[in-house]
Image (cartoon, rainbow, N blue to C red; front, side, top):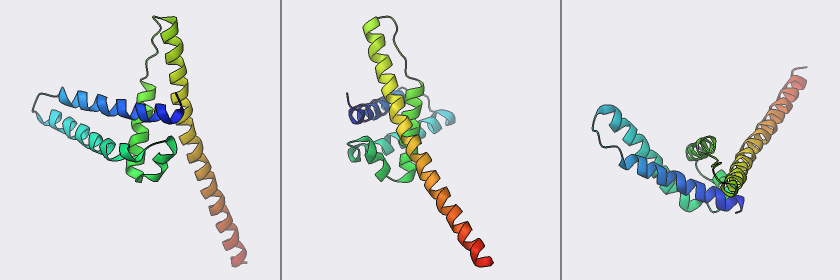
Length: 135
């Protein structure tokens, strides 16, 4: 499975999990209503974002708040990923998928670090210029 396919299928799984967990909320107390509202908001974001994402890099083109939400969901999914060790074949498949999930996450953090480094270099350049002008 390519990174793009895994990324998209994982986002769909996340949405399905949210829908399922939301449907299991049956109480009507204040805390449950707050949790339900958070699920509703997350499902709404994923419904809005999923049609726009065909590959991993498409995430960079969405709204910043949606970007952060989707990346956070993906990260939480990856952190909670369970490798099934009851069957050697299933374990190998799960380990491969987990490794691929981590690689995808690393791409985002690596790209963010590069963007930060670029901005820092620009800031350093601006500070150097203004120091020269002050002299």
